[in-house]
Amino acid sequence: MSQRCNLLIILVSAGLLSCQTGSDRMRHDWADTPLYATGVGYIREWTFQERVRAIEAAKQDAARQLEEKIWAHRIDSDQTLAKPVQEGDAIKKVSAFVRGAELLSIENKADGVYIHTRLFLGNHLKAIMGLLPPKEMRPSEGRSMESY
Image (tube, rainbow, N blue to C red):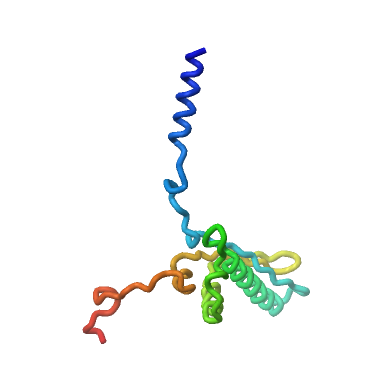
């Protein structure tokens, strides 16, 4: 019986020692998350002009979905991106940022065109939103003083 108790104590101790506390874990950066959206453009009649219109409608639908996802994206447990940034200028910048989403595929289905997109947030979005401190530009970065 004492052998079982010793084994149980060793297993429990090993399990407790291998657990990580919150400070030990590597923190995940919210900006490293890609966002995905599928835009839909419906077609009544399959003609070239209707397909072009449907593709444009699908792109706009995907962009709208990505913008909604950005504003709802959590940057910590109780705060979304919409909370710290409530300026009209940031809304325009995010809208322009979303236009750079990667087009993954275009599908033609019976009811219309489906466009699948992916958008990496990254530090570029943080800078747009004003969530990154501005970097000081040193003469070695960018243009040299002689190029002016």
